[in-house]
Image 1 (tube, rainbow, N blue to C red):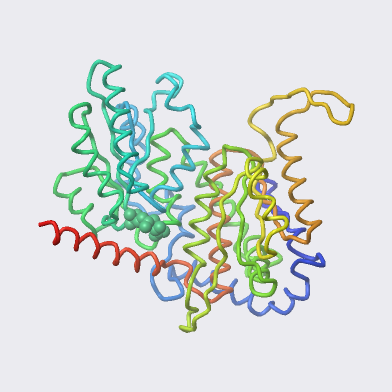
Image 2: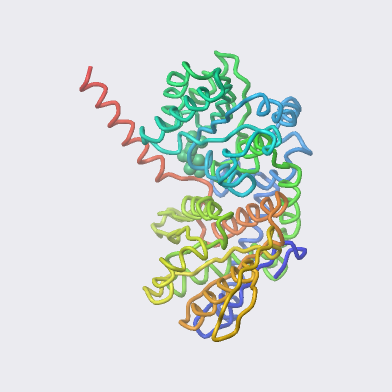
Length: 463
Ligand code: PA5
């Protein structure tokens, strides 16, 4: 299957093999697949999820063309957000979960590991970028403070630090702790400015932003954390690091328009979701390894792991029956984890499928001399990268292990937008097939209550 030759979906090792899903499984599921197709059509039309609450991610590809998810005023500020970034030396993006993972991925893909070592000109005037609030570890936070201190020492002046704080709920403890700590600890070395992205009304971050007249973007109603990368959450960050947001959104639009049919054979997202659903339900697939090839896409795996885990890992179906649906998400990276996890994927418990992600046209050409069984010659590394991926796929198939291979043509904002949105859809369709609510996360809410109680008890005990 292909979407305009920009995003290819190879399902040969998920369908039609002796050890994979069979055509007759799909025939037996035909009614269910049609129902899932209809359910997404209804969701697109009504903007409501299975429990009646707002689910508006299908509007994201059109966010800049309509006024459903963003106001004109916000659009204007968004388009000028790069100016804010260019007047800062350092950008610290504070957030966790859906308010972090996608932005880390954009940073890794488009800026890369050496960004902060480049000079300003090489960064096209954009600031150095750090992340905080994605953990509660005080050591990491203090190291970041030391780094800002070092920067200001080298510059012989205070650094201009832009704190971008992202929290939909505005109450999450990790980012709010990081914000409080950084705002105090950075004062001796930094002139701090703040930019917030949070819920329209609720939460202490919104209150704080209003009271302090901070510039503030809104996480739109109906956009859950893990579906928010193409909303203000990711678009503002993208502007702050110089990524083209119109391209990101047009990739998503291409996929949305190619995946609207209620017929699975005309809708690659529904088709792939149906295969994974059948694999889970009928063939004991309990884990999904997401395995991008190449370092650049490493954090795509972490982003997808959240989307899969939080969306499909559900105890109840929509009728309230206990079903414990879901697959264990495992973020791996090729070729690195072929020397670590692949042994288990190949010969361990036969309960997993591997989803490869790769890029057809490499961004860089580099050949190295190779010698294989007496033959010597220069071989491009991108050829070897793809060759390693295919070898993994073939070896898995030889052991009767299911996999699928998703390929984007190039690494560009357009293709990343397409890839993210494709997975939004596959997850939404699979939620409909499994008859679960893919858009809530009651488990996360449960542990948050326990954690907050424990912190409260600590405060009381230590008064
Ligand atoms: O997907 C989700 O909703 C969660 O993982 C959230 O993104 C995460 O808990 C962070 O929440 P918030 O943005 O409200 O701080």
